[in-house]
Image 1 (cartoon, one colour):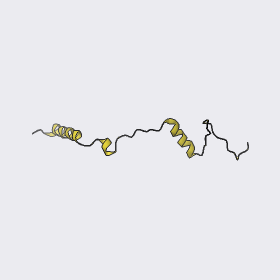
Image 2 (cartoon, helix red, strand yellow):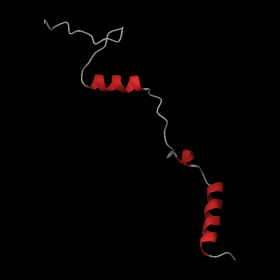
Image 3 (cartoon, helix red, strand yellow):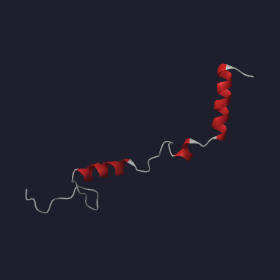
Image 4 (cartoon, one colour):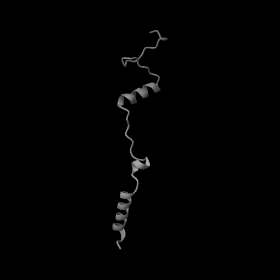
Length: 65
């Protein structure tokens, strides 16, 4: 019979090979499908900034400068 650290290593190795992976359990690192532009757009929306079709900041129709 194996003792100590070697036995624990073998048990852990066997468990890792036979058990579900972290991805199966839903705890694996999630890859973000958002790109940097989407992240900046979300921040701008949070602060009320609106963009036009060309990607420029839309002018407020009610303000006169």
